[in-house]
Length: 482
View 1 (cartoon, helix red, strand yellow):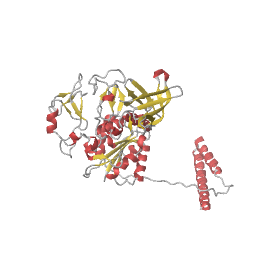
View 2 (cartoon, one colour; view 1 turned 135 degrees about the vertical axis):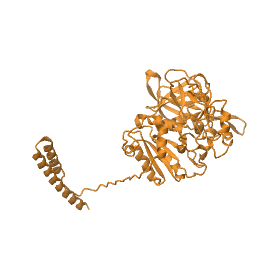
View 3 (cartoon, rainbow, N blue to C red; view 1 turned 90 degrees about the horizontal axis):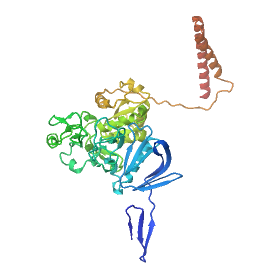
View 4 (cartoon, rainbow, N blue to C red; view 1 turned 45 degrees about the vertical axis):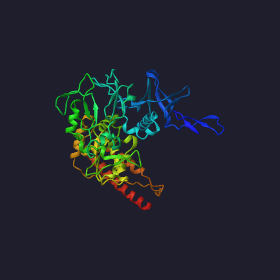
């Protein structure tokens, strides 16, 4: 007979003679590897080996080893653009600032640290409801949604959720409720899901931090700079007083999803896949709609893509926004196979657009989708030709861009695949291209060095004859290869 202790590390056993014995069970880490850790502002970054277990974190280098138990944890990105892929792990009074080589590695480590404080039964549910924090400052008085006190400080005042804009002190973040913006039907609480019609989208409210807005019900000024009060719907962006909220829900029970409702995939229309937990599938009929999938290259535009990705998640359903630098386009396009028609918005340069188009060809989805471009990269020739402009660095334009995408006229685009084959050399060794090369260089040099029109014409005539001889030489070489 045996029992597992609270940490899941030791197990007491009783043998047939009645003697109590104890044995250690090896626990597999959720993730392990090397991370850069900041040791104070003056000491800089040092390399440590981290191991993340359920309920425990260990890190060590050649000089020291640290190990501590974890009950509550908060993980946040360290900056708005996050150029060095750094993030902060907050455990009580302990703060660890860590950095990875790529954003993909950072996302994997953040997920592992979040799962560290969860029970085994909660591991599959944690990602859909927990907030995605990043450190930021505010240009007006802002209150913590947990303790309802003012966020203090000059630079990084506190944490903000990149999806639902939930605000928190660093010390309060681990106690924040798991009430982030819904992504699928599984995330919507049962009491909200069945309160009205199962086909209607309910409102999702967040309290406070409203300034200079009017109540959608009584049309009077809403919000306050002095306290955390009144409510905002995360989907339709309506603001209401606390006293007006009940009457508003009676008269406007169905959420309209705001100005960009045509581009939003409703959480009530998709659900978590029963076969693959990381994927979602349709939970209701498509009704001839054309869902929008957004691919953002977070590295594009000098890391401006991070800001655009966060804003898209705030306006749309976070489940329809994907980071190309983390998972590539294959993951998002796999979910689109269930739709009869869908639209794609690629936020990046020409390379990002080509990457998505190549994956569309591989999955044979080119006849089911239309593709728009938001230029963020260094090379934006395709976006310029299609009329989307040469660059875009203002996140406030995203609602307008989504409206433009809804009314944009489709045009056909030809894509070419060029195949190059290399043959073994069958050209005689005495044949050489260098004679032609030297002659061409000499004639071009004469043309550039003279102002005499006659010399230019003579050199041009010689160039023509050289090219004719060169073409004949290539023809003979090709025939010998064939």
